[in-house]
Amino acid sequence: MKPRFGFGRWLLPFYSLLALVFLLIPIVYTIVFSFNNSLKTNIAWRGFTLDNWLHVCDEPGVCDAFGNSILIGVVATVVATTLGTMIAIALVRYRFRFRAATNLLIFLPLATPEVVLGAGLAAQFLTAGVPKGITTVIIAHIMFCVSFVVVTVKARVSSLDPALEEAGRDLYGSPSQVFLRVTFPLLLPGILAAALLAFSLSFDDFIITYFNSGSIQTFPTYIYTAATRGIPPQANVIASAVFLLAIIIVVSTQVSGELRRKRLARMTVGS
Amino acid sequence: MAITAFTGVATSTDASPRRKKSWVALVLLLPGLLYLVLFFIVPLVSLVITSLQVPSPTAFGQYDTAFNWQTYGVVISTYGTQILRSFLYALLATIFALLFSYPLAYFIGVKVRRYPILQGLMLVLVIAPFFISFLLRTLAWKAILSDDGVVVGGLKALSLMGSQDHLTGTPVAVVFGLTYNFIPFMCLPLYTTLERLDVRYLEASNDLYAGTFETFRKVILPLSLPGIVSGTLLTFIPATGDYVNASSEFLGGASSTMVGNVIQSNFLVQLNYPVAAALSIILMAIILVIVSLYVKRSGTDDLV
Image 1 (tube, one colour):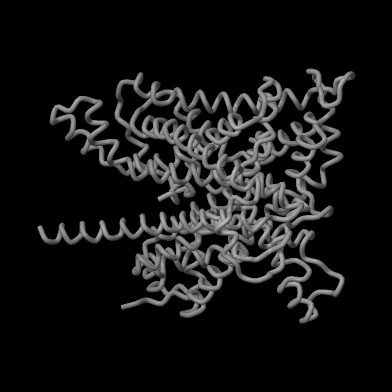
Image 2 (cartoon, chains in turn red, cyan):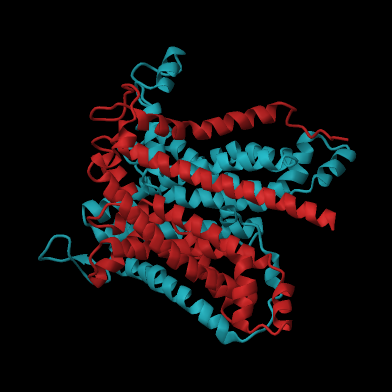
């Protein structure tokens, strides 16, 4: 029996469809205008062209800014994922004093508006006489990514069955063997998800970056400064390409997860 | 999935960590916590120090250490409007995002539960805006809402807007932009709690002759409270400090300046660091008070 619970039978599906379409409007707009045969500004539609896609780096600055963003994103992701994973494992698996203080220290950066994080770091670099540049941006990105990594990996560590590690120890595995052969592989999906999240946060961050980048440009700060004189279509090309790549990654992880689950279910039934 | 980072669902397995060598915990914790102290706590302290500085008599943009509390008074009387406006806009955006997201999250989390592939696909569409540059998304809205865009044209044709009216550069556009940009942050935590909602409770409620509205108010809403709390926080906090939507190159104008814009221009353009620092401290303090009251009232302490 299929019970009916209000909201109207068709109203909700119809609303959801409209809502999703609404969410996609600016994305479609950005992608469409990456094919615009624009002159100076990329506002009016002037006809379809593939030139922007074929000559992305013709527009000076776009590719440099993109390269910087990738470099910053990779370094920040690796460091933040390492630091955050270590904290997450410690929080779930060990009992220690100052646990409440640790939780607070992880939570506070998430509860702080970016503008405060950015201004704070900039004030600190100013006081310390550190010149702004790619290093200061990386330092800033690691800082705001760590808490997100901790939260993501912590969920995974919590759902891990401690019996598996115990089995490893019972089979005379040394602590490092148990970690490398049992714990780490089981945590890997969570760690990868956290890394993906950290990278996308870093790649798209503007507010904190703008306070600490000085004269170097990342992809978002490039767009911000270009917004006054008009965004070149090449920026749309890069954003669209990144978008499509991200969607492919997410969809394929989801599909492969679904297939694995189905296969697993079949195997369990079969045995 | 990356989605878990946006959920406030309490992880209950925290309860029984077994006692182990605590030096291992120390080794695991120390680097990360040290990093956060060095690049999160110390910057907050240097914001406080900066906010108390006085201008150097010799050079522009140089400040001497002092205990000049007056900056706070000056800042509140000068920028009180912008501070209040930021909280008002953020509150409106949070409410609109919640109203927009709840039915969508309910549909994805409960109604399409039996079709995992469709559910996954819809979820991808919800988080899709994350994957395209935040600034370009906002600029796309600026173009769509511009005076010669479809929306303004349509509204004028229907006489819903005067011929001299604009959408961009108005508070309406800023609140709209904030709402749009934070919908995924609202939707995901809602989805995560609703996805775990046990449908049998709804059946029970139905069996007990509760109407649709009563079931929603007494069963669904309380059960999804953790998602509502983390969704509203994830929207409200970044929205108050945002200065992209309200910036005049994006959706805002002179009448919709938010505190983030003031902090940014004082810090990066006018090099008036004490004012920017004092505003940041005030913003942070108000948010911490609001968040702790809110979290305490809604009874979900375990947010991380």
